[in-house]
Length: 168
Image (cartoon, rainbow, N blue to C red; front, top):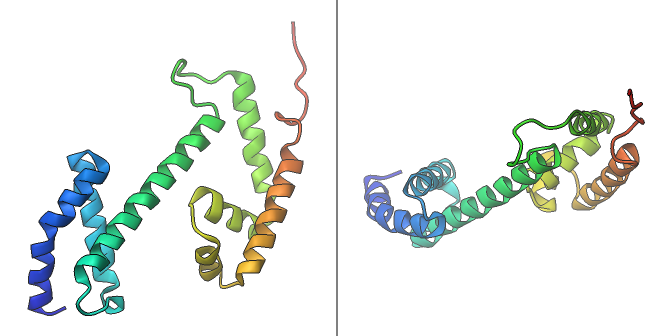
């Protein structure tokens, strides 16, 4: 990176921060988002096109914001699924058992199915990104994901797994 590019980046920081602040509505989150954007830009500096620095940085920042939101939504859904409830701090024994059974069932999937399921549903990667990360065709990602979802449904069918015996 040349000193001219360094100056260009410095000049764009206030605009990036304004945009990030508008997106996040939180100064601390906006600063984190800008920092992540700059880190990604510097690590991928060779992929930028000359003359499009501002658009490129704004695209990185926006994509990072969307990815962070998507990840947070998935994380919250996962926490809700496994018994997070704002009304009570302690999950019931049945909820804990159901969550452990669901996680145990997840472990019963093959490594290939588990990897695709995690990348697409938990991490929010697209089929293309997942295919690139695993070095497999997109069609293979789609079929593995379909088989993984079907297998997971079969493993967790009935909700809580093996029946619990009531003790009076």
